[in-house]
Image 1: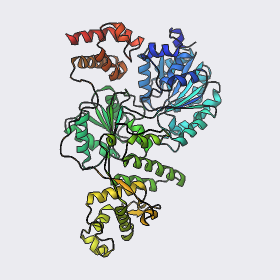
Image 2 (image 1 turned 135 degrees about the vertical axis):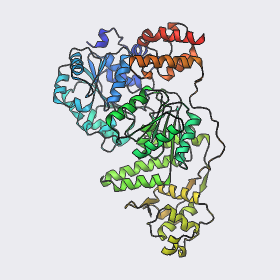
Image 3 (image 1 turned 90 degrees about the vertical axis):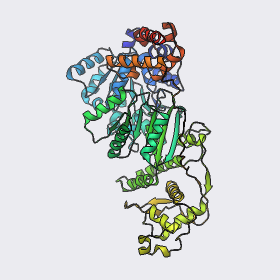
Length: 606
């Protein structure tokens, strides 16, 4: 018998959803997945971050007799999930290296004696023979593998331990297995099914669209000032993540934001583990903190009220971009995915790819992933078709909630300019960077051009009627399209791509987006989150939540999400029955916090 059954929890999925988790209805394909897994089937679940993946295994775990084992790659992720479940009245525990000997012994005893509904465990510990033998002594009702894309050697978060999780199918063949991820292209999906689930598994793909996220991509001009302006205009006093390419840049960016009066920290792999943990804990537990990080930060961060994710450098693939931006707005409230990039970013990533020790096949795959991201960045129409199309999902466009829909860019026939640029790269020897190529195109007399004799080339000054910023745009978009490639030696030079001949010969045309000219007029756009942060009710509830979270030593969102607080402010319930009707208020939280919430509302009204 499961701990849930002994505790008197209902066995019906809708009743569990309402009474335990406080939600009135399932979303998307959640109920279909729960029925399949609850009946003993294997499943691969692909849902966007914030789409409700965890309910797809948590509800079946409470329906079936026994304990569910959840494999998770990060301690922080496990800790947050367990705290959230316990606050909903679920018997959950974690088994990892952070536990002392006595806590570990007690947790293992609870598992063996059937007192747990869910046990979260890292793959390294699960793979120990002693752990597997212990599981064989227990009634295991479900095996859930979170962040399943980590199994892919072609993916962006590869963890070699995941390759060994095929032991679960051999040791526990009768136990249903469910693998979950927010990002996996067709190749990665195939690997997950083959390595972890078996061919009989069903694949459930929910929509990857995050309609609450506003996507914006721009060009670097003064990246830190652009970031500061964006934060002050759209998200003052709100939590966000800023991704940077280098460790040094995370520190410099955080320092700059602090100098400007914002609350910011840096996070990167070069920091000590204690320092990283302290930064992560602050970000999770505090409101309004900005963390400037490399890609070492993020996977498993279960913070629902991240209002923006910003990129100051180009990510390496569209999968990475989607995964990172998906950490914004997990509570369903409006959020921003904001990025600036430059020609130098494109050159740098292409050079790193060509200089890597990867085999030819993997390099080809990574080039395709990068090119998909660059096509998304240079997109002139709605951004969602390009982003979602990568994951095999069709979108009609005209979302009305991206920069291109809200402020459509101008496009122009750049065929002649592109041929001039390609010819100049060829005539100058295919070994010079953008600056020198543009000098030759515009006829700018320099000592270097004279010494090399480039002022006597047929391409000298043929582009004098076009400004330098437009030539930078042309070269960037030619790189993005693969018509130009960076020098593989890493010296910053440009070379002709393999597909440029048709364009040079006049057999094909090219249209480019015209880069927007920055406006000197300050925008007075509305903040992204439609919440009156000056409301006495909002401030009182946030203060109560913060004090309660501190006393219980958990993040504030474990008590209630921002979306739930906003709904409480809007509904202004006066009784516990009215409070129970609000999404996110389950029976356990109603009993635990209901009276305090009503008192807080009464006090704020006074």
